[in-house]
Length: 326
Image (tube, rainbow, N blue to C red; front, top):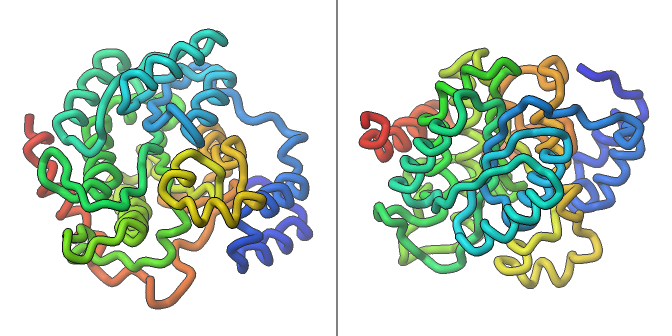
């Protein structure tokens, strides 16, 4: 692991006890300065093939741009054909090596087709970044009849990961799967029985937080099942000023805007996780904020019940099994 000064460690630990200072641009700037990130180059990504979902705005666009600048070959995934074409053209115009696919990750048919398209184009994948995700304030069902938030942020990424395991294992750089979660998951305990909310009690914020909690728990379960051949990590970007926050949480955005990180700061740990030496990351299954591993639970009542990760895995596997047997 990279050495940090005692002062940097102490300040970081104190910051982590807070929420607003730690997750705001204040926390990012303090850590960046104390840990000297600007004095060290971000690891190059030459020769790395990276699949990134949700790239047309916000953190995803910032990550795609910087990964391309660092030399990565990008396969980008977006939902809106017009936006995908426009942003892809912008990236290619500055000599970023990128191609793109159109897919709605809440639609498992789309995910299956997407995985096939990616495998046709790439024998190996070095990094898979699950970034796509939106907070829906209205109860909606996916094409297969699942609540849209769970479909897009749990089932879709689960299936895509399963279908891309072989090219990820073929990576000569050490395959990695990075999932962008949210600090909102700290408010929820994993309960598979309550994961998929119904129309009668639907709350978009809670549905989002539950899905994000499931992402963190799945990373730990992937790590247990797959072992050291692949690394699975989740990260949360803190509070970032993105179009998704503006659209989904307008009141929160209005009151916290002066404290919000920009998209580049939100994407920083994604980039670092993609290229940092494995010795700096430690064991697979970590949750990260600002380049440091964090606890997955801040309150005792949100600790994961025994056996619940296994039940979550079985729940996902049951709903995607038809696509895994094709």
